[in-house]
Image (spheres, rainbow, N blue to C red):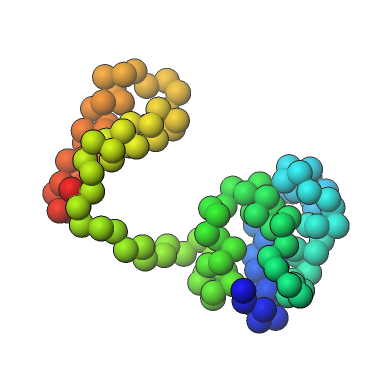
Length: 134
């Protein structure tokens, strides 16, 4: 685990900036994350932990609408919100991918009809085929 004080200061500043941009007080964020007010204060102080990652950090980050990888990205020196390269295997099980994309479309669109979702999934799969990913 990264114990660099500069990295933890960067993380603390990023959390505070994100919270403020959303118009939240520390107390509001604590309630939204289901953690104590003191946990939010500690997260924004940026003191490197002595042993392990504080358990309150992931819920705080999630309450701010950030992905699970965000903490490690910021600690590793990446800009908050910066994309990370992920290796993708060149051959993907197309049926599983279609099911995963369909489920994502269903979760993301509460008013779309079945045929609209199928059309969107087909379009997404066509793009992946064009790029040679499936």
